[in-house]
Image 1 (tube, rainbow, N blue to C red):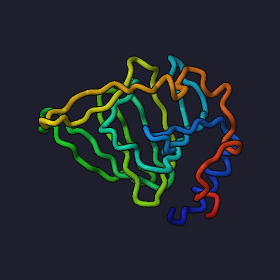
Image 2: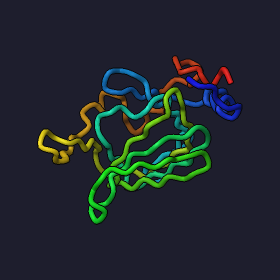
Image 3: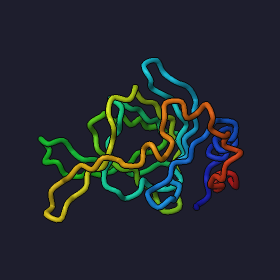
Length: 180
């Protein structure tokens, strides 16, 4: 990974005290470290997220919440986003840089793509769960098909996961930020 900022290093040290869940892709590769901060009324949550790799290339995904808001604290990423139907339902790309807020609606389909060797720290909050989530991929005929996420339960994504989760410092986390 490329060198990180002092602020990233500070976030890494602070996150060592927080309850953490490492989220893996479909081949077991870690791509997101989720640090629990607090629950919101109505079942939502606030987390410190550290992306250590791009979202796995399973297609664009939606979220199980009616809304989510992300504030990029350090690093940054490119977001691949499905434009609305009135814009032709094409996939657009936009940079999301430090200091920027990113609102993600429940019906939005997107994918986070990191620069090679990069990472991104975000403050992430969302509303209560209102549905399951999944992926939008092109089929062999070029049509978009929705596929439900099959391993949500297997990943330990339950309402109170953070009550028993280990602290960040007890896990095998990517250490690039610690070297800054």
